[in-house]
Length: 88
Image 1 (tube, rainbow, N blue to C red):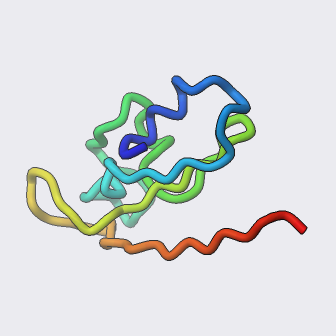
Image 2 (image 1 turned 90 degrees about the vertical axis):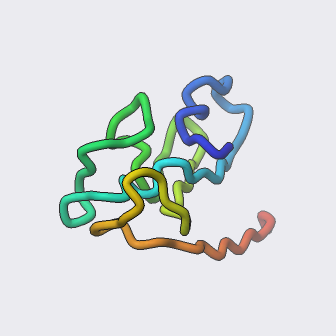
Image 3 (image 1 turned 120 degrees about the vertical axis):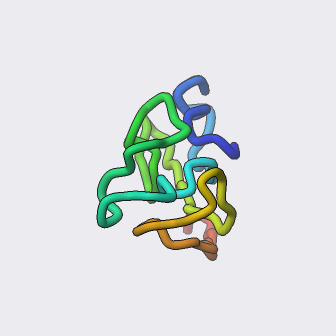
């Protein structure tokens, strides 16, 4: 799901992994730890990185795009390469 907030609406146990973006890592943050403005109803929870929500893992990328204002501060653009392996 583009928006990581959507994991809150999915029935628990339905998915294992969700890949998201949308928040741009906060785009402007204080040393990468806190962003004053995020497009998320859950504030800093889904800003960037890996978040466990129940049995699901949410991977939130900063992406490479921008919204207004068109600048980044301590929220570097990201392209994540994910390699999936089946259980042995």
